[in-house]
Length: 278
Image 1 (cartoon, rainbow, N blue to C red):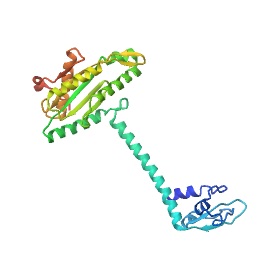
Image 2 (image 1 turned 180 degrees about the horizontal axis):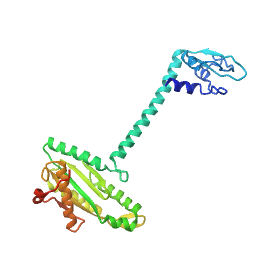
Image 3 (image 1 turned 135 degrees about the vertical axis):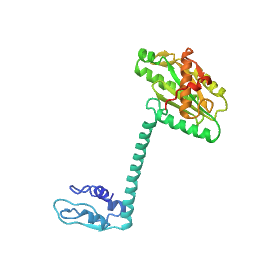
Image 4 (image 1 turned 90 degrees about the horizontal axis):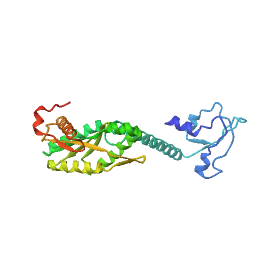
């Protein structure tokens, strides 16, 4: 830091002086005599460490005119500059870390938590449910015939559809303990904590279906988007997060087989044959 400050204060060492700190600080023109001199052979570090201020030099003279200043003023100047620099460095590093974290855990298109954040939130919801002897559940959501939307209107329009869907899904979830995530492509999930009964999931699923039934207007085109929803919960449908997620996926497939644009609750009779991907 000392060498940096030396470079800032004496950055004019090859040319005419442009920094008259002594007069600015003391506000007394007689306190600092201006003499133009040449710094040949003079150690600027010693000037800094001896707490002196000079005003300038020219190539026509070899003499210095140096006026002693109060050490506390020099220390204060150095401290202020150092604090300002360190503050900017800390802010820059903080913003850089926040951006890296956002890219690591958030979906860049929708701003929703991504697959990694989803699994982290799922583990948290599961731990809270076990500790409080309560429940948690998952709504697995998939866009119906999203490929046809992509092929018909193009990738930019399809991306806008996903953004609009994300905003609508987010508007359906109010509690800070609940999570809406995009885990890939046209796949979304909602994690609900501390739900008393299965009817709460059904009510939310119905609300989402009604909200999604309104066409999405993209570039002057009205695009109808249908979704299918699979519902599963802990401890009803699984003993751990992986089992609950697999049960929700299984229920999602049932919803698609039922004609799409609907929801399905995991069927208890399928539990013994449930395949869990770990």
